[in-house]
Length: 236
Image (cartoon, rainbow, N blue to C red; front, top):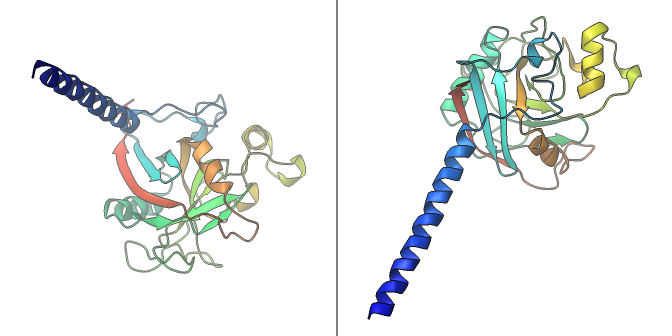
């Protein structure tokens, strides 16, 4: 009898420890705002996207089947894009939505509930204008609005720039922006064409893992899903 009780107590203790570890791990995962190494965020460049998030900044956490990606949003620069994205995210609009267009050394795209690339709508029920603020570029990790072939057709779809390396000849930018593209990668030909409204600072390895399942025509070889998007404030 004593032996049975002892075994039960030991089992209960092990179970409690495992549960406690799991809870702490989940909590740490939710609050970990460590900035990736080799990321433009936190670098010495005099660029907005190089600035570390400040206390109170809006942070988006993508919980995907490949892992977690975090980005800071720039509401002051692209107010409509940020308002639209945050509103849809809080409504659960993106939960369960897959990355339908994935091209290695380019970008990963999601935000279409139909999964076809032709669906989705804005918080206003239609399309809204393309915002092209000064000082935001398509560096690696840039979060931007996808649109139709013409300007001012933003809806719900978005993409994250993944390209890790650029050839010098593909960069028309000069000075600091040019050097930042050389150091961190990106896709400069998209600048002034699409609305950049955020920058990934954690989880670029996850973005790479998603891109690795892509193809030249954009059709992924594996279904990768956004389980949930969380909107929080940076605690500093």
